Image (cartoon, rainbow, N blue to C red):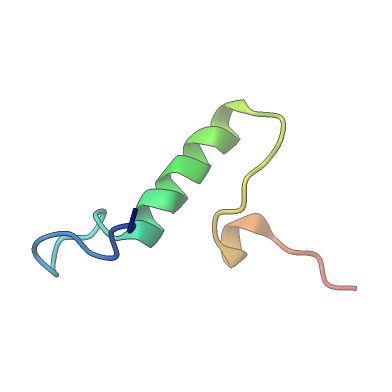
Length: 48
């Protein structure tokens, strides 16, 4: 099955697939000891 890229009106944020995924990832991070990737800024990838 295809995943939604955008749903209905283009001005509505929160319905983009990327936004839905980030929202789920944040919910996981609130509880789980295993952290899910959210955004580059939030996740703080360490440079060597």
